[in-house]
Length: 376
Image 1 (cartoon, rainbow, N blue to C red):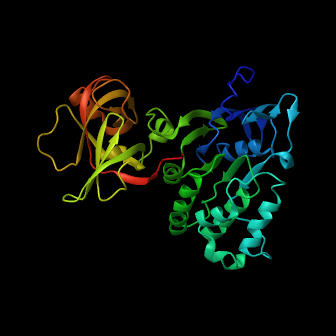
Image 2 (image 1 turned 120 degrees about the horizontal axis):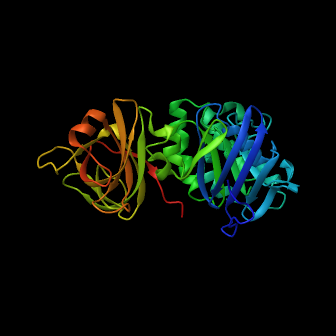
Image 3 (image 1 turned 90 degrees about the vertical axis):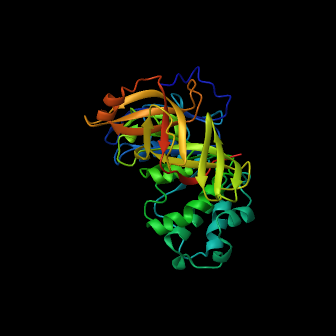
């Protein structure tokens, strides 16, 4: 747990600790997050994600609790700031727009609630970032699910929050609507100078939108930190599923017109990606599925696989008697390269006698683009 008396609040980030019985949980939650960026509160259904979100908003209170936002204490043993005094924006699964007001009037309502607090994003910029220009005069009855959520997010931000909370905001949308709204959210989140915490149990949402992850199970935080580190921890339950993947941040170095391949640089090496990725110097996020990585003792001399990466084995975690996860670091050096997971059979593990600390080669069969990464 966090020692809240000694915890460094000078970074003006979030320091949270909630403990004790609440709802059906014996809650034991503690985490620290930076002052800006997007955090996914992630875990199986019923693990306590929404309960923690309610504690952050002041809608629920634990006997043992501490919450500081940007150096301002909202909850400690002597003090509990009520919900109506907390500068928090809240977005639910249901957009809950006012049906008698137009889109623009719904947005302006949020601005009226700001109570003199400065704009997080000027209303004209927000309208542009969320793609609402053509919707302003519409009745909310004539909006799609994705459009309604974009308006709800705009309204929440125009209330001037110091913290934006989102409770599975995309869960009620179909896949088409979800894919339509995510690029707007990605673009918006890059501009925000406040922390965003959203509840999700969808790894694809998390890979595309989050910078950090707080991983929960049965009312407890079992891991938290930068998204890439949590996703690549081979011991966590999130790494045991059939669609386990790792995310890596890359920067565009060059593009070959002849081959139509983009060369990117990562910590420890380079990764080639088919197609045009972006301008030189632009930053992006890629996803590598653990099942799409095979391993070799020596560098293959002839292969059609585009990316054969020198790598070092950092950890080996056995799964179900047949398979195992290996945590790899790009480059034949210490643990400074970008990290990702490979899933192989335990038979292969025994056959090749792979060991922690061994230098090998990882053949990455495919790479998926999941979005930009720069939040500056």
